[in-house]
Image 1 (cartoon, rainbow, N blue to C red):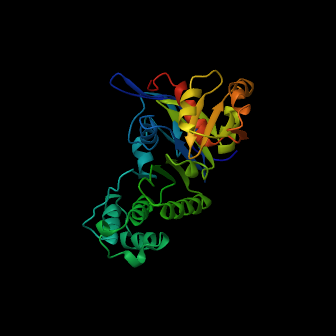
Image 2: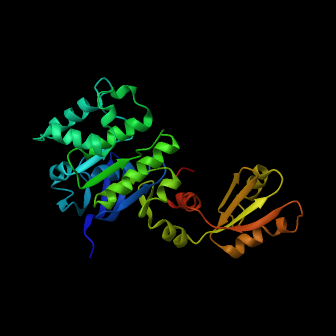
Length: 307
């Protein structure tokens, strides 16, 4: 059996009267990139912080890197690299000074060697004397990743690490993640980007504290069993408003000059669209469901979903 770096069952966390994470269970294998998806306020960050020892669950059980997530949080933190949404290093220090400061906080003995090796590994050596505040978003992201990797963690927890970064830098960042995973490092990453979700080995989807789907991207799409049609014709926005609420229509979303319509009952959805097939102004075609279709369709299942 492949080594599990995360194995937790029924974790719960509340803040006051708000139940933020509900019976959360997850298994992550060594060398696996596990995508964490869901709307804002879904409990992704809280779950990540419980796994890396920054928050103690109210209830539940399990291990991270072999340590108990309720009683050995300090040990977990020593072997995890955690990258937050916002750049949290010092902009008035150089790249090398930033990493040296982080190495000192970890109490690393060979700070100079570790900093030099990390700068080289992540392609930052040529910029080592540049002030962090002068970096572009993509290079700040790479520096933040370097700070996470400095103490040679066994697990990376990345909280929306590519927010606000251009597509080229995002692609390079994901190439680096797959390189690290190939060396045995496990990665748990939250993201709102569907193209990034498809780069993960497996996915978990949370909505308002509830874990609604897990598996590979293909498995998650297949499990939902959505029937999807694209409709080309005049005024897709008005047509979407007309179709919403029709029996069989779960989603009706304009995409440019076409309308994307989905439902869980193919026969009922076909019946709902029959009047369009009889209209020469419209072209109705079957399409493949996407991760975005699946995730949007899952959101209303949560009891706490906004009305």
